[in-house]
Image 1 (cartoon, helix red, strand yellow):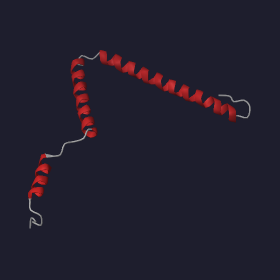
Image 2 (cartoon, helix red, strand yellow):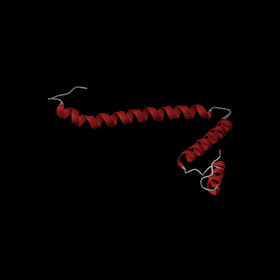
Image 3 (cartoon, helix red, strand yellow):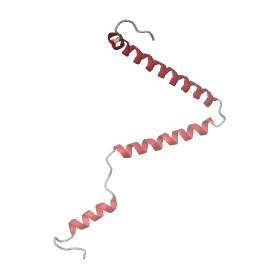
Image 4 (cartoon, helix red, strand yellow):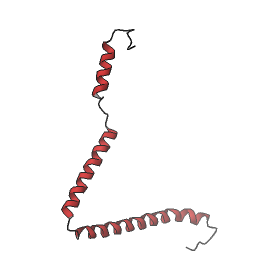
Length: 95
């Protein structure tokens, strides 16, 4: 790319244009790859099995994501231990 003038103002003005062109090129490559992948999927004989496996995997990923983000319930054994500690008289130890 040829630059004219001192270059400082031109570089600042062309940076957004260059960034936009880079994003557009990246999107174009991504869309092309997705279309090639979809075309190869349509020719498969085990498409229903592949879809079933994909659905199962997405379901498992969703379950893991919910476990990671959602508040978890206290474990049953921990709950029983807390109740036992609360019910024991003060000063009594397990020794």
